[in-house]
Length: 438
Image 1 (cartoon, rainbow, N blue to C red):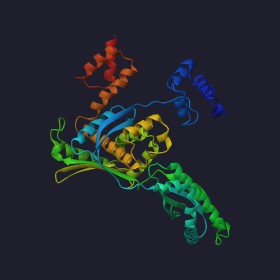
Image 2 (cartoon, helix red, strand yellow):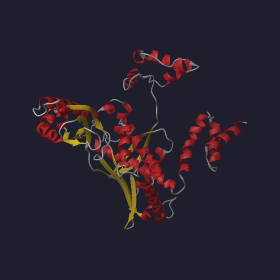
Image 3 (cartoon, rainbow, N blue to C red):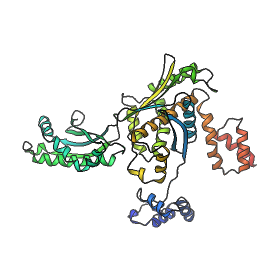
Image 4 (cartoon, rainbow, N blue to C red):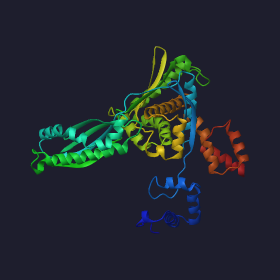
């Protein structure tokens, strides 16, 4: 079997599917049927999906759920979440309901600055480069006006432009460091277009600069690209209440619960092995809303985890304290999100998700996403410090096991009745199914 192919992108969709099916599957007809099973019956909708990426053969579905009762800054939200992991939506909804009777979540956008850089090499005199930059800075910004005009009308655009000397870290390395305000768009295409124009103008201006009269003073642009690290595009989410108000059915001693939860957070603050899993739980909530609203969860993940390492060691994103009898749980995370452009105006379910959220601005969406991440973290810590994480998770996960073994409705009823009073584990469920079928 030869799995290499030339000109795959030039094949029709049917030809691509047939090649995949015959090359990789013992039963090509069955493979083709599975691939086509997930096509939309609406030809226009399927074409829309086909054109999101290259070499499309099918659609990959993920569940979309709703976590209701999120009270954020005095307003209720039902939050769409797209994720495949059991218990995430349930945990978010449970946390939302818990805090809705204790004042709800508070969220504040602290800053919305985004960053892009032109990376270039310069072997000449550093002071001469500084003088050159000061002389041409206004020309550099002016050269982007055709790109920034519409953004400026909405109150955005380039907010600053600096020359940064990075030669201490890498020989001959400099950068144009630009900051942007992109309002309700995430702004990646806008920022990259501006940066490429800045790079082009930088080269042109250098060629015309009288004091750059030898090869040593050539500017070599390496690349121009936005940064997904946005430490000045920050949103804060928090909850607080009197310690005694934490009491409920599974929290009989609220003081002990609060102290134990704070200790769990402190462990994540100092222990990277725990912090990674701790923050992964936060991102369960964050990513699911980012996906549902058509934003780039890979960019968000990269930026958030870089932020978690900003002190030189990977650490917890969330924090907790008791002060004057008040329990407070909070976090600040970088989020560069958009509610216009990209998939937000193309994908029907993304448009629906934004409708459900009340057509939020980018800043409002930042607040919602951060709150869901904090809620998810609270739910996880609450489980870990009381009943343990597996009790709720395995109750949700049991459906996956039952589907894997194609259980009948009668079998499901008997299995779930049995595990209402018995510990759930994958091996225990499988064993029960096998005994049931003997």
